Image (cartoon, rainbow, N blue to C red; front, side, top):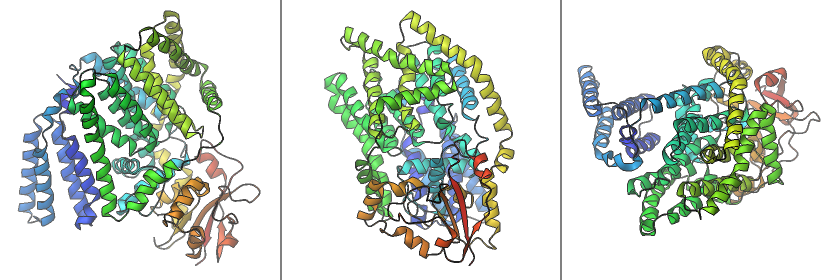
Length: 611
């Protein structure tokens, strides 16, 4: 019988330590690709052995065969010995059989297993219908460019800077590795986080809220339905961080205290904050949850939660300190977020606009969201009547309020900032207890499924089946190949102020340290980086003086630079700005075909140096 306890009884911390060690290989002098590949071979065996039945025997046998093979081929080296002893030692060092009591859940029966399979299939059906569009959001181009630089031995912020937290790029690097740096496959593989979020919602509803499997599946489906929107199909940090925040929430809301459960809750929450620092707002929620239960365990809860939370942050800080990057790390993680400024947005209006966008997709989808949103009042009233004695409802209300708090503090009105609200609203399906309301809600879910799931599924299946062909037809990918053919060798540089996906395809770093196009116009970012002496006030002029071989930029129809540059307001995206250069002839229809959200007012330019 498959049990979730068996899946949890793994060497989770040691896998984390080995992942950190991989990033430090260069520091140990293992710079060649052969050593890194050998490490990954051992790492694969390690993970495989902790997942399979009789994994200890499997681990012994495979390692013994490794040793025999290298002995017979006379290839035993210090590197081999170093790695084999490392993995052999850590395989036995931290026995997590103690974690049997972390989740405290019963065996997975066939109905629950079928539920996981259904959620997986629904994830594939809802999340891949837009694969034929190369770009859904330019933020993704930035994040994978930073992640791709890890392949070249650079940590995030070391050579290229973006404002997300380091584990976001490191996990993106892992996804790129699994997808062999194929951009389309990367987009498919990233959906593991969306799938995980849907599973966590199911577990919270089914296990914590004691609802039926049907309600659990429906709650997960609501999350996936909203996530089927084009903007939600992008690979955002919010999606990834939700996976670890959700796991932490699931562990913490168990009714019985367990030090190991709180330890791992702290670990998962720590990872979430190192993906998106904004999730730090939920620390208020965890503290409130600690206070809501028996007071005699209060110190123990805080202690073990902190024992999981703090070492992860210290490990990443140590990694950056070891590479002489403490200043840029603390500036990105602490100084810039605390200097964050929202734009002049209107919270309730933004909420309305978001719901209206759901309506444009389907009236049924917006109805589902509205029913769940307004039902919060009913949940709150029932809680007041019960004098807030229901721990699960209290936990839900606290975290939903904080999800709205995240949205309010972000103050940008971006749709992907609503993802935390969507996650917790999906859980609220457990608390729809008014029969007429439940009837109308399930009718809306049924009608959305009837009219939308089949077209989504057909489009997603087509895109997955013909994925290699779709990738070969991506307009910007083909444009990148054209650019590459302009140079005899690979020794050319690129200054990118837009369309950074071209740099990813060409495996080229940006000549600018700040790489996201809109960050050049954010005072709270640029000023802090200048103040810390990380970049100079004339960083763009310095990059221009280096005479890059390729410049990627854009203007509006009036010829003004499309993305403002606060340190160089007079910059012109023309060949005259760069010596001995010419404007490469690019059909603007390429960008129209590649982007779902195409702006007709933007003129995309490629400038090539003659030297």
